[in-house]
Length: 179
Image (cartoon, rainbow, N blue to C red; front, side, top):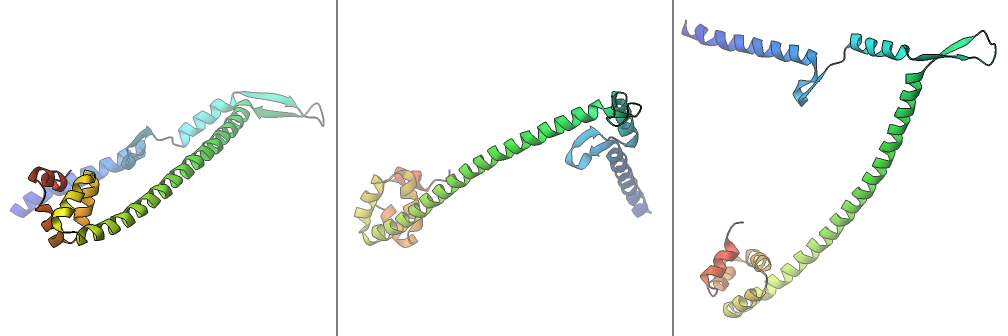
């Protein structure tokens, strides 16, 4: 009996939430992407088309003067606007391609710098590991904090610990703290 009293509110809540999702999704474009603009159904589209039909002009046909053709002014304007929008989107795509190529160039340059830095780091780590710990600690003081940190963390732990033991505690704290 207690189980039924517990299950009924959950079933009711599930049905209520599901119903609200279906109802709201019929009113708005896409509630799951937070697009709460009103959904245009067929009646709304027909009303918008009827407004466009009211702005028509009669044009004489070249074959006979009695034949007339209806031309939709808004349709022509819409075509012109659509053409202008396509032209703008093409120019935007060109600028996007230029910016993408600049970004790609920057990424390639950064990758080259990173690969050059990693090669330098490997060579420097080998050099510092082969030095006596006292001399290695003096050498590390000459590098920037980031470079010294990279060198220490790239070394073998035992060798790095011996070198760190020769450094001042504040400097070690500065190198090993988490930023």
